[in-house]
Length: 304
Length: 304
Image 1 (tube, rainbow over the protein chains, first blue to last red):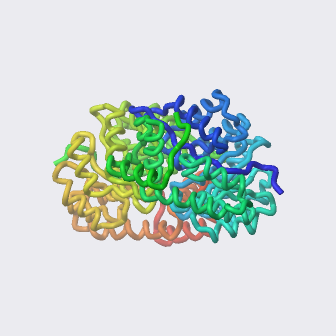
Image 2 (image 1 turned 30 degrees about the vertical axis):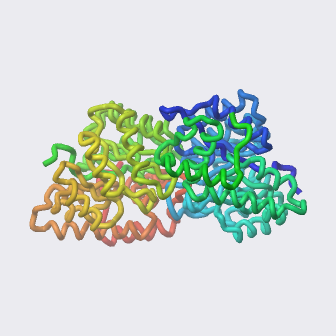
Image 3 (image 1 turned 90 degrees about the horizontal axis):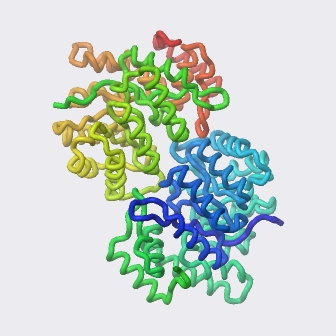
């Protein structure tokens, strides 16, 4: 049994102004909407374009949510970085503000790095932060980071830092890998969050902790409902509905597509802005996306 | 014809203290030794572990070399980053200090990004720095960045920013690609630097500008000699000797191997320190490397 956080987290998409600066007010507003929909706040993730933001911008975003009264016990900011000083600064900020956890990418510039090198990175991060409240969630997203988190590495880290190493987000999309993590580590209180709601129900049935998923930005209530009622008779039907909606977004580049949907239902075109190297959806793709979502009776309710 | 910089540049390996902080004094000393060996100073490159350093550390390193009187007209710092604010801050610092150029990685977190997104990144970098003295050298290292610089992208950037887009480092190791860049763009004054001295002689014979190579950290005089006398009768024999030495280093992970060689010939074991996710060579590998280098009559002269 774990006493740690469970549930659905959204890697919150980051709203920009026309000059690409962060729109902090709109970020707070979006996080409030997500929180109202029972979804945790995993700002500064892959879908947040975190690596397209400077350290200062990232620290300011965490501060903005603290100051706005977003519950830190519902916050799991992304704090990993290629360099340890940046990762330590972000992780300290989040941990000192009482965030329930941090989601930590491994260093992702060098390729084919060893587990010894990754162990050293995480050990120095944990010891550099030096805070008993730190809860590290590892981040396995090999198709983007090119730096997989192996089962052997998890085992070493759990042995060395059983209190701080709290779980993992598995964004590999490989259910066999997620299941191996669940089978090998979840009994020890290591919480496995699939990186997509596609595996939410199956994960929960095997001891998973919820999910941390891009599309929790656009379909938070639906995804939370599966988490909250996964033993209900209609759970498989609800999961099928989640898959249907996610499938539509996956017809397009995910981050620009989610921003286009938010722009549409909030009637705020500025939401479409992304930072390079990403590009916004074309007008045609935006129209097709919205048409497909409406044809599936999807809408985003309560957006401002 | 180009009036821009030509020659051999070293992506200077970064000396750390035992606690992994940067040893600025030793960095200056190493850059002086490289300069004495006629090699330009490309600090903050891949081999410098630049992405394992914070923005503050990188800015401080550039400042340390300025303050020590290293000639900025021999300096080409690495200033690319996943996020534009960091890339702009570094590029401004280097350009305002009169560096001859900057070597700019593309944003390397997201994969399969479009040329449109990369063009936008470089355009915003150039316009964000807003300095007529800026000379951008693109950085094509697809096996590490996973973000290739295509010929079509170079063409677009040259058309939009003919003054600022000055050249490229091609670290692909693919001579056909280097040759295509030379054939298509060098007549316009776009300078192509192979990313390894393996292609130094062949590059020079096809209009190349020199090279920017890891092993210029350990064999600067030898590599410079080929650059300076490449029309001499013994040029092919000199090139073969460069290849022999590089081949020995390539038997090991390159960055730890170069640091081990510098540690040996400077009699300073602290040089072996790398930041995670890299790891130092094992004692056995260090011994084998030095043995192989000595067997090839290689030594590093004049190191302190």
